Image 1 (cartoon, rainbow, N blue to C red):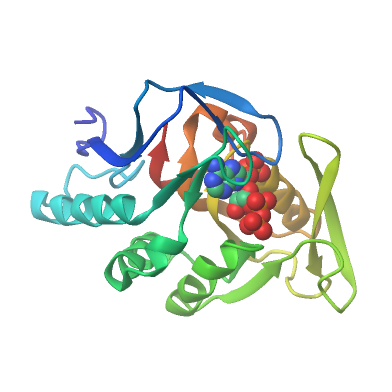
Image 2 (image 1 turned 135 degrees about the vertical axis):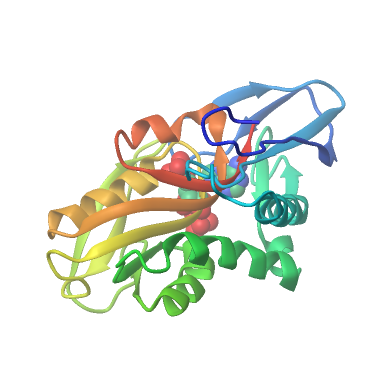
Length: 240
Ligand SMILES: O=P(O)(O)OC[C@H]1O[C@H](OP(=O)(O)OP(=O)(O)O)[C@H](O)[C@@H]1O
Ligand SMILES: Nc1ncnc2[nH]cnc12
């Protein structure tokens, strides 16, 4: 129980079983080695009603929320050694195969952002394109795709970010957003935080206020959250 919020935070002891002594997380920035016991039980730490003051929240509401997060967590498959040895890949395609868990995912985000005066949901290619549009439709915002280089046909502005070897870029159409708009940035996962930081910079360059970033999964060991500085990050599941 979080003493501050009264939220229940619990661990799902075994979600997916994988083997191997050391597992690395795939990142688009630094590679970090995460030592795990052998055989390895990959753990997801569901985060319930994260950083939402909830003294007045009914216990039954909270239980229902925790139940949804547990369902989402167990629907995500973890594939070891993909796309290269040592990587523990968090595969959200299995979440998409489970309509109830997928709907729960979207609903949890919608419940958080409805009525918050957000006019832009910016989704990061590729997996941010899966979660962003249903959230945008439900909260009455437009969806703006933030794409990998040379994919958007119109005039673009771009922002570079660092990878383990070299750099990458994300791009957004000029005119897709206007100064003063309030945006939510959505992706499936935060690892080092480099991608989300680039998305924030891109939006802020054109005068958009990034209200929050939201991801289904956080690879907490990689400390991407710290890289975001003061920018709030909301996640459903923290994997360590
Ligand atoms: O926090 P970071 O270290 O920046 O990493 C997170 C990013 O990495 C993954 O995308 P990826 O670059 O693999 O692209 P994809 O979604 O097109 O596969 C993920 O979907 C995030 O966008
Ligand atoms: N471990 C991981 N699983 C899935 N996508 C990722 N992007 C960066 N690291 C990842």
